Image (cartoon, rainbow, N blue to C red; front, side, top):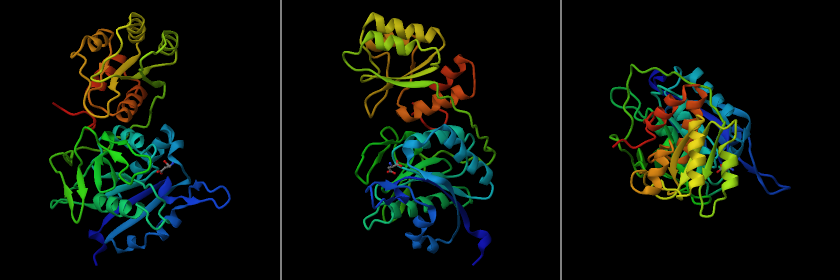
Length: 347
Ligand code: ASP
């Protein structure tokens, strides 16, 4: 066998249920090491691939994920970029959509597959979904076109037979194996007896584009969700916060908010102070259209930007990313509206 021709895959194990074991005293699931995981997947040896691994030490529950750990993943990919054909990131499901979204912006110029996966049941459990998720993610990360280019040169989540664009995903079930949805973007591939790639949806490969990773993210932002009966004093206090630079504003339906003078005034004050406010609907599918109703139009007049059909995870991490680059506010506002990494549907 010619080892030169084999694709090389780097598995980055961050933690999550896939590698957890049950504490015999408390009964709770706890992170465990990567060797434990590999012991339960002897099938890995059957791949005609060179597989290497790196692991977080200690591995984490993904509820503990944060921007500096995203930077650590970016750095692991950056330093190994030329040595590997694809990357598989094992990650807890709880914040996987946030990490996938963040990576899609931080890994600017990415032209290799970065596939996140995990599982709902630990890999040591008989009915685990982890094995299939891991094996299929590796296969897709190694997949090449006839010309040798990668089939999926972008950040994805593979879960329960679906390969989805990472910054279009959301965790929609706490207990089903079918835990992730991509509400506004069709799957990039489905894994049945064969893997069917939807090539027209996958981002195009360009050999001229080079990886130019960005490491800085700003966390001076909040997600703020409307509800009937929301209190003026609480909202005004939050929106006038001195450290606050950006707000993901979760509105009703097609991007609507109550027609209350105090609310429009508080939002207008915030945008004129230089805060970036992006309108994201509370609905799980569809898009913000602020010109549709008066209740949306008033937000446009207040200087609020349409997040169109971005997921909350994508809008949040995109804002963290853009504010982290310390760009002028107008530039941040302009780029929030623009599709940077496939996170917005282009009309
Ligand atoms: N709490 C776990 C985590 O996100 C859940 C999982 O992996 O599915 O790390």
